Length: 371
Image (tube, rainbow, N blue to C red; front, side, top):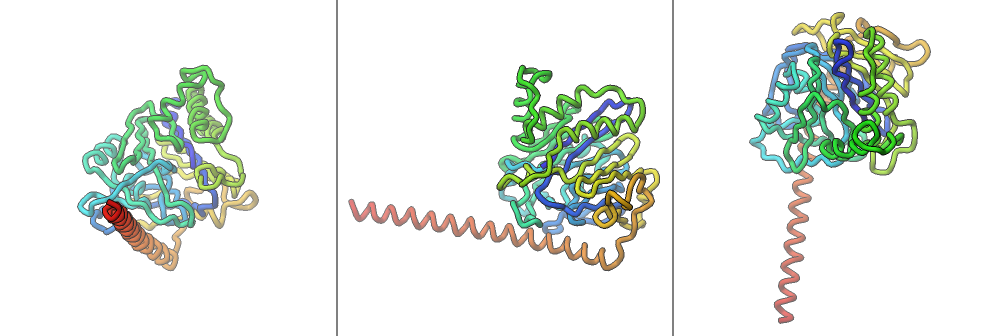
């Protein structure tokens, strides 16, 4: 599921591209979220905050932030990582639901360095949510980047956050873990090895291809040139429409792509299922505290003929009280369902442990009788 690429030296601009690959439509809309919004961790509500920065966010089902950028030129991208292991969580630890993981960072940080420092200092734990699509429970990792060109990737292995922090970490895909991707890419021509750059859709192949082509981008003359160049790279790493591989939602089709200009604060969105390109310029939006959450309806209004196209900065609308109430109800449901899911998983583990203990006792008893 997905490819993310950073181009940190695009003639004075930092340009980021990202593909969203999934086995079904995520009904993604863009949301303008102002400063001063009150939120919590989406688990037990122990971690609460008020957003310091406004942001534009791509939401799955209007409930889960999966991609976005804030008004400081700090951006984040949620991607799939099958190897993720979040571990058992002590209730005293700092927790964030996967549904608000990205949003917390966009609300609170202006730079990658700030985000990394907070992550390492607080030993934040990520709590899985039940999959709203009814498929595999999400196993995710997070990419961060800012207008200085800095970059970080956060993965959870054995219950702990592993942070890879460097301007050199320009590409992220999916499996295997990031440290292994860095080694695998060295076998290809132009990247340290002799093998031909691969053309397949597997994550390691997309990682190599995106790394290779990003490194060969030429200096753009204009912002339009820079955005077009990044689209050429992420389209090269996109996945065609096809039957998803069993049990691998990360091996699905590309359903949308975005290109972000972190320097000039432009967010460009292209759908592959509703073909058209729209963009949003932050200097045309108000993120002042007290302004409304606004929605850019890409599901209902984006289409090849007669739909939204081009600059849509002024086409965000108030979703209305009923929709906002429904979304609040949906967020509450996710919180309740998340807690219930983990309680059930805990109970299943306890039952399994009890069964194993009884089985072991039975073996010991039979051995004793035989003796």
